[in-house]
Image (cartoon, rainbow, N blue to C red; front, side):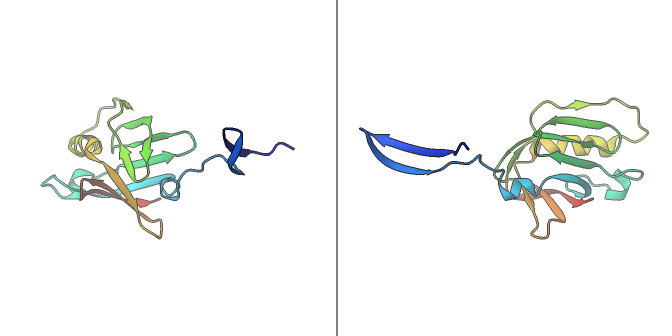
Amino acid sequence: MIKNILTLFFLGVVLVSCNASKAQKSDSVSKLEGTWELDYITGPRIAFDGLYPNKKPTINFDIKENRVSGNNSCNSFTGKLVVTGNKIDFNQPMAITKMMCADRQGEQVFMSTLPKITSYDVTDDGKTLNFISGDIAMMRFTKK
């Protein structure tokens, strides 16, 4: 049986010896896993239900594969998940389908807000995800 033991030597003297293990994703990152549905977005002067009359945007996090995907109320998107602690970066290029939809204002608001997000917070009960820009809550999702 192979044991993962980390030993640090200095001039032939053992300074530290301990069990080594693969780092696990932090608990806050693992709370992102799964599908979330948007129920609040800041900015537009139109009511939320007016922005998304037929379908609310969703976002899905696959922590194992470091992928983010979802639907912006019209088109599907997918891209690389970049998370460090509670910091999240949506400024990476994403692949987006190009379906024709009747009302695209909600889609545009959703996709233009994502790159502004700098961090996230998942409530202790794991049911609410907040996307934050600086110290302003910009988007809120509910676990599906």
